Image (cartoon, rainbow over the protein chains, first blue to last red):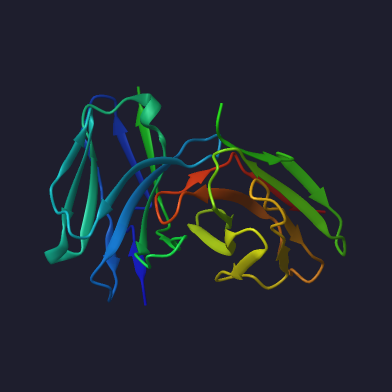
Length: 117
Length: 111
């Protein structure tokens, strides 16, 4: 069965610190997608990144970076020089690639990040 | 502006009542989804639809029903058979199997 584990329930950092959010996944599929979403206090989920299982290159987007390692089934997310606006719940998710018109996402339980000024 | 709208933002229901949550998208996406989120939990899939007039049960479909009569609309009805309906409900859409985009959510409270 597919499963996503985000072991860190809550993380609190001081502004400008770097922080890494962990994500470990389980799947028997050889082809799959991994995602990160941000949920600010308003509640709406904001898409951050999608990674194909065949692409293990690390991704950097501004202060955000992602480290995908198939050998450890991990897809970790690092925020460099954190800011108060980064405070949110962050979800990691997994989907199988069916070739169909939908993808069913399996979500982790989320990590609440609090960035203190 | 393209996006997904959900209404109402807050909804209160008495026990035994059915209520319908609205979800509309103008992104021209074929696929639409409904998720439920409980405090401290991840999102769980209720129903999803790949195309008009077709939908499939997700992991927690009991006590819920949906319809997909138009591409833009995917309303969710929470029936009286749902034993614990108080939760935050999120609608999403996607183009094929790509990333899903989410609406702002509806917070349902049973009184």
